[in-house]
Amino acid sequence: MTSAEIRLPPLNAGDSAVFNSADFTYQDGSVTRRELEARLAEIDGPSAEGEGGGGDFDPAAASLVFGVTGNNQLHVKQSGNSVYAESASWGVNTQVVGRDAGATIGLGMNDVCAYGHGADVSGAADERVTLFGTGTQGGANTTALGYRARTTGTNQVAIGAYARGSAGNNVIVIGSGAGGASGCHVVEGLAVSNHIVLGNSSISAAYIAVSWTVTSDARDKTNVTALPESYGLPFIEAIPLVEFQFDQRGSYEDGVSDGTHMDSTKRVGVLAQDVASIQEALGHTGAKAVDSSDPTKLSLKESNLLYSALKSIQQLSAMVTAQEEQIAAIVGRVEDLEGV
Image (cartoon, one colour):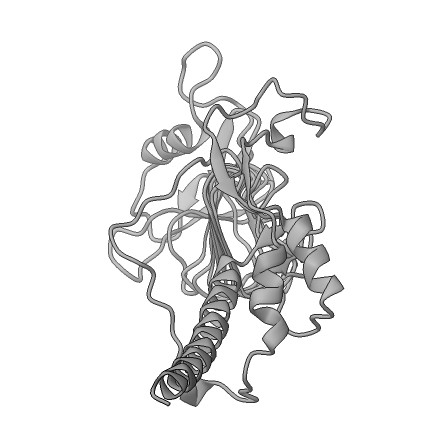
């Protein structure tokens, strides 16, 4: 048997004992062969007959590290039915546990935690990545938690089974299927940045005890101008209000709704396509109420409609004030005529 190194968990912090696999002896003689064989059996796992040691653990195959080394590395991988530890030339604070996990991690990469079958970074140079779950994937400065939760971008969080981040930067997706094809807003594979996606398209209600508080500090805004008149009454008056039921395309294998998965709840609202066409007809080149960053599923920025409604109220108030002044002037003339 070819000599190889095995580092088992030290008895004291900072200590380690080196085992020579050629003659089954420790340099410091602190562990007997019987004790070593018992340790190997624990690492190797039971055989098909239920005996200790499955037989496919080969200590001569590589230098093995089990426990924490000077660089705080831990790599535990699986081969067949055996689980064993393997050394790696990563940077500091990198820990990988699971079959086929960490296959893409490059040399010297720091602060990567990948736990689960196939958990891996998106690129060899990605650092500061935290992955928990089978098939998880993440780019630099990302966290992915849940079965096949993945993101290829940077500075992202993907939580939930099949949650999918974007290829961009600073994206948060939370919920089963969030961000993917079954999500309420698709960011997977797109160069989308600075988005938050909550839930999938099957979510039928969202609850919170208080209203959202949105930052609106004038010191953080520039190029401030008055909202054009066309964003008020001309816009609001033209929008058709409709009653509808959801029949999500994501509920069908072919992506075509046929009514079999229609939601029974009746709702009121508007259609994004209607709003987009009205703004185009009015020549709106500034803020748009329709978000078309995902062309397969248009979204509506309802707050924009709120501000257009406020603009309409202001316009109506101005009209009422002007009419009141006209009426007052007419009443005054009538009174003057009656007094003659």
